[in-house]
Image (tube, rainbow, N blue to C red; front, side, top):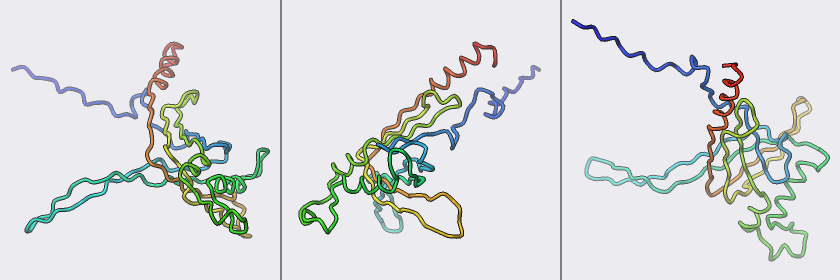
Length: 196
């Protein structure tokens, strides 16, 4: 009787030197005229699907509905740097959105518009980088993004923490571009150099 050998199970990712999970600290974010280094934390886009239900006798059946994208949360360091103050930049975005303070004559007829708010915030992009960092392995581009809320932080005599500004960004949808080839190129370079 011939004994068949069992096939070896797939190796776990941690035993494969070529596997590289995405890391939380390997990213940069681009928001219009804000320097990258003040962006301290960001949530990646998320979405949910609404539902409708139908009840029939003793049963409930569910049907998928509309896709709703959740706001993006961003934490900035409030900084004074050569290109300006972060708090002032938040107010500039508000005013460029179409908001006019009530002590101005034109405030009676001027309002915030979606096009104004989107143009004021500008291009919003998150790039996740690989171990080398030269080319992104993932790019998230928010579409029709605008600032929904700004919290200018808390002051506290008992704390020596950096002062943060919390933003909430609303958007209609996002584009995702992945590029595993950039990581493959990095691995190939290591193999060519006989490092792997």
